[in-house]
Image (cartoon, rainbow, N blue to C red; front, side):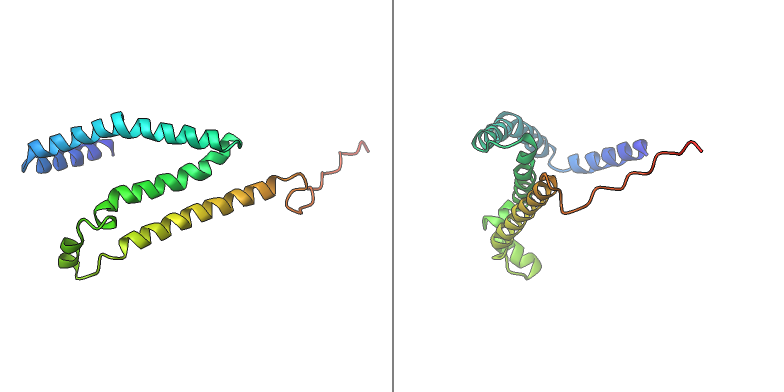
Length: 146
């Protein structure tokens, strides 16, 4: 299976580099440099700032990290349409309006953070001292010596 993955990757690389290989290589190197030298330190700085502002257990921070990551990934993938940069091209190609991308991305982001907050509230409710109004499981009786 791994060999099939390598073969498919090699085929895609050959097909990709057949055209504008210099532009593609520059884009890949530029993306790696931009991510490693600019975005990664920025992620770490924001993560530490959020961790410093929220004096909560470390596991709670994931309820901010996960929806922020998914929202950021959606923004990265769809940013030309979210920011309105490619509206004409999109509308000509599909015949659909591109005005909905910003509002849908904001709605998805709000839904992600809301779902994460509800999940955290549910976790806290189940972790409270009384539990979630459930009775402890009955213990089996010890074996008798008869």
